[in-house]
Length: 87
Image 1: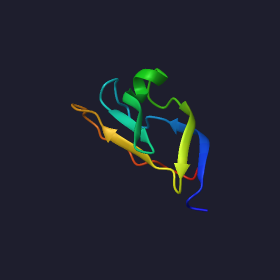
Image 2: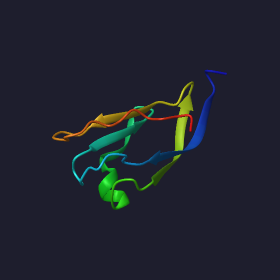
Image 3: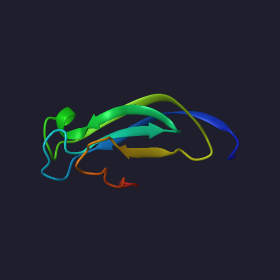
């Protein structure tokens, strides 16, 4: 039912596929219109490019479809890549 509110645990999997340095691809992550990560830098947090990183968010309330927003941070050199799902 599209009108039923449900609560989810959301796990987002990240990997920086390009040979970027910390600070080159920085963005904000939103779930259901609420910012859950600000100035997120995969390379910095994962310790380098081509390293997987999982971020988990609990208690995400969803009515209908889950929405994920990736928004470039001010001054970021590279834009977020489009999400790849389903895996």
